Amino acid sequence: MTQYIFEFIGTLVLILLGDGVCAACSLNYSKAKGAGWVVIALGWGLAVMMGVLIAGPVSGAHLNPAVTLGLAIAGKFEWSLVLGYIIAQMLGGFLGAVLVWIFYKDHYKATADEPDTILGTFCTMPAIKNGWRNFLCEAIATCLLVFVILALGTNGNAFSMGGTALATGALGSWPVTCLIMSIGMSLGATTGYAINPARDLSPRLAHAILPIKGKRDSGWWYAWVPVCGPIVGCAMAAGLFLLVF
Image 1: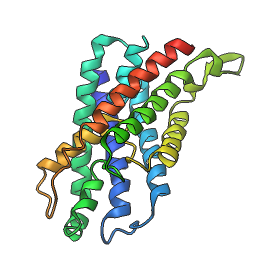
Image 2 (image 1 turned 180 degrees about the horizontal axis):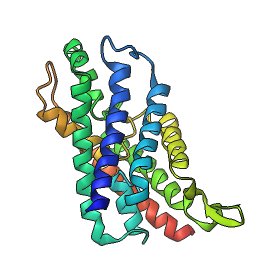
Image 3 (image 1 turned 90 degrees about the vertical axis):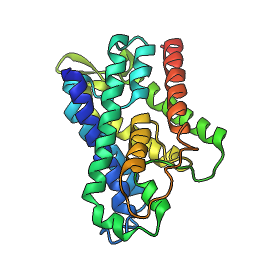
Image 4 (image 1 turned 30 degrees about the horizontal axis):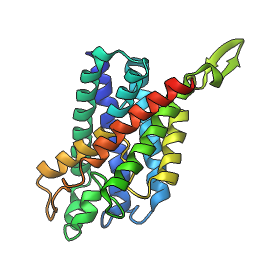
């Protein structure tokens, strides 16, 4: 249960800070409104870092059902823990989104005439509606995410410190932070790079449930993409990792 609790807390912090930077850059009268894509990409990268710093020592800080599944498929994680991790991540993502709404509630009221903007602070929507290409984008980006995470722990990425061999992954949250920022800046502009069902589906559910003034529908026609794309992508990454390494 301790591992599940830390996955819950880590994912909560990830979404609180990640959706928080989206709200800060988008909502009316926010001092950060208009800060732009680079700030959002940096914010999400640092949000991952904070979540990993909290949960890493206890649960390994997956914070993402796609990462959990990818590690399990690659034989790096116990299948018996997968369901509990995913439930904890989804619950943490939901509460994180609720906290963003509470934090920025006055600004949500001030943005009530922009329902698309409000939705965009909770979950992803495509820049151009093309279901299968959007799916492919999410699958490729998630494949890269999980593959690099797996590669970080290999002997080929080892270095020596004080005579002790350490894998790059031993540096903790920093490599993954750089990875998330790189994916956001390079591959995130088509779909908003969910690459994480807990980052998208849980906040989308929060958007649907919360009494947000002026909100639109929650974009359920698109919700399958940021769930199925990452699942396929993590399986691709695990298979590729086993083939290459």
